[in-house]
Length: 259
Ligand code: F6R
Image (tube, rainbow, N blue to C red; front, side):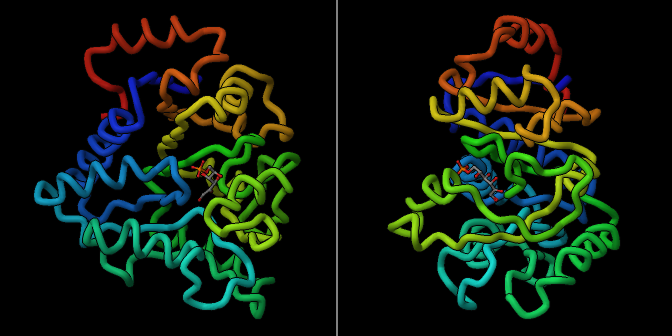
């Protein structure tokens, strides 16, 4: 099962995960990180940024989880632009080392396969950051996605487009399609770290961690992974039946197992 860590707030969660990333990069300066966008990973990027002097990230490789299809080149809400703004520049990654699936309509048929090939050529992802959608998606693998899926185009649910309208102004402006690492791709990463903060994620988190394995809750696929860590705040843990068990298990561990 996933290791579940219930933290006081997103800042504390960000610091926990930043520790794991920094330890990984110290041990392996050319580590390969899977980079999520959206709000959930921001406390991690902020915490790494606060400790920027402690570790050199210039040799790290990054692979974004997903990208919208069909946004104009350079659109400020494209995940290419978001990753550059929120990760590459503040953390000092080398732009040429950071990859984002290509969301251009021309070439979209082969873009997924090319992306999975590029991940494999880099040696696979060492640590994959994940958020979770209120509908249970990881990446943009919406409910019904195969657990074996490769990187490919997925249509976004109405719920996801409503959730992401906060970045665009209106749900109608959120693209209808994305290109996303598949669940099969995500499961090949050596360590999964899923972050979720706030009440709105409580149902999705409970279904993913304690519900049945089902493609109706794509994030439940992390139950299949030998090394998955879930970092959540109290609000996101509210519907977990075994929250006390996770607290006890964490209190009893001498060090966070991801270190
Ligand atoms: C983003 C991504 C999505 C988000 C999810 C949660 O790259 O793949 O799965 O992680 O939609 O978004 P936030 O964190 O904004 O609540």
